[in-house]
Image (tube, rainbow, N blue to C red; front, side, top):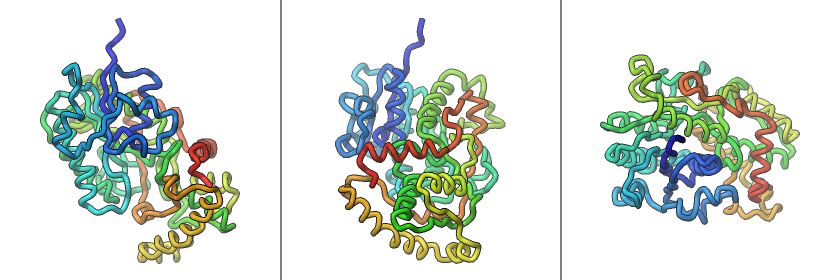
Length: 378
């Protein structure tokens, strides 16, 4: 007799990772019931056509997971049963926000849905976190290595991890992600691609701060969706037999990062090949100056690029509000910090196999093609 399919609740289901997870579940018919919860409505979420069936209609519920009064709306089911898997893909993903924004939209949200999941005895609660919680180091960080968050998002994600671990009865798994990229991505790799497109228009060289070897580890959204599902299945089926609390920690924690060693140099070479522009690295003198004057350096770069980018959009008849893409560089992403992670545990314990094991020119070209399909790309 076939095993009963689990029921699934995705918090932040219209966000980048949430929509791909919902699509993966829908495409492979993995769940008996799926609910997508988000405070934004699908009509303004810039959903590509392939997400419509998985993320809208009766599957979608508009609710604010930071509001205690919305917990019934989020968790209650018509048959009175509880959800098997809850994936928390919610939280603030924009950089350089005020602390209060991250506290409310990330920390408080995680704790609210975590407490409710514990109260309802949800079989597996998957909390999405970031590899930026680790101390910056060129050597790949394993799950139990030193933690020293270097972005505001990471500071509050780590607090969420620690507080969730204290909730009695919560069947918690923590997933720490590298830079996620793929079709329709609007952060990190998107910023670099928009910068490259603008430098191409300016017929100028794209020069990077710091060094060619600075780690910028990555993972494709296709593998993120697969990994999240594999981890939830593993937790509910095998975790007692294959998890050693004494050596691995009380809360199962997994890095999700591809097997390629993505660095600034790797990305610069891919951009050079795609755009046909020269790419290089600033010398030690300029990088030292930038470290001491990061605010002004970031402002200069943004001032240089934002005007020409707006001009490119206008030429292509693309409204600024129509595209989520921009070459605007966030200071937190321009720090001299390595995002360097070791993903061995996921492969060894869960048996996960990456289908897109490293970033490549072809995968980045697919990203750009997805932008063109949405009319986001000049």
